[in-house]
Amino acid sequence: MHAPRSEPIIEPELLMLAYRSGIFPMADNRDDQEIFWIEPRLRAILPLDGLRLSHSLARSLRRGRFTVTCNEAFSQVMDACAAPRQVREDDEDGDEGGSWISHRIQASYENLYFLGHAHSIEVWEGEGAARELVGGLYGVGFDRVFCGESMFSKRSDSSKVALAWLVAALRRGGASLLDCQFMTPHLASLGAVEMPQKRYLALLQHAQGEPATRPGQFAATGSSTGSGSGGAGGVAAAEGVAAGAGVLALPDAFGVLLADAASCGLASSPGKLIAQALTQTS
Image (cartoon, rainbow, N blue to C red; front, side):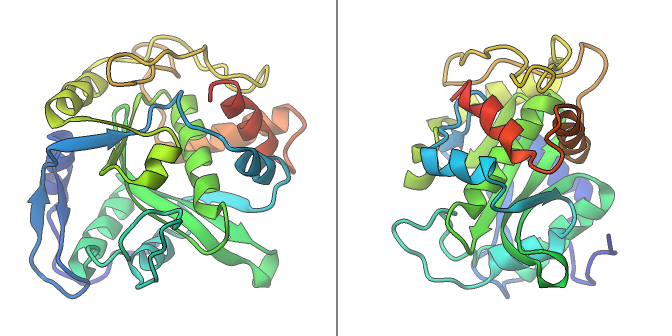
């Protein structure tokens, strides 16, 4: 972890208040010092019991094609998400090149990361000094909410693997709402649903005020903490820690997943556990 860059930042209190209110910042381009606040008329979420796991993605997870980490390279993930790239119809990250991530916005989220409010999932290929960051995502977490900001991929399925790990960790940690901001064909193919902002705000308020209902049992039997049924708008039922015990932050939930895999004899291939659990509810 390193201190945030010396860019003029959005104050973290203001930024977190915006997220808690269903609003987020964007910029016109990488060098733009101005920001504007977005409150979409329609909002996309990914139900935590509704991720569609394709055969190829499940195979990538089970075979351990990539190594996945959490919060090891936050700035590198943001750099990759913000970097210019050719946008294809089948682009699996679904972003329009990431130019809305200005230097000011990046510095602001790096500060949130430094303060423990923003997190990243990294996907690596190779070993040791030859290890290369080939996919990942980042976002903001609070209470039982994770707001996904952007993701990138340099290999087929790499950002999807990051998303699968994110969903598994959020479920294991007791989260109930995964915000995807804007719907894209790629997100729709993975199970995301779209709803009016008013409905999203109701779900957001609920996720900030209601404790999870029962202890998580994600990996002891290779299953999730119950079936989890989608409510109105396709929202997953709450899963995770006991009421009053709090909700695990993403890095802690990620660590618990690794411990679960080790307890099942899958320390060297934890993706098998992720694939098995997500397949049962996808």
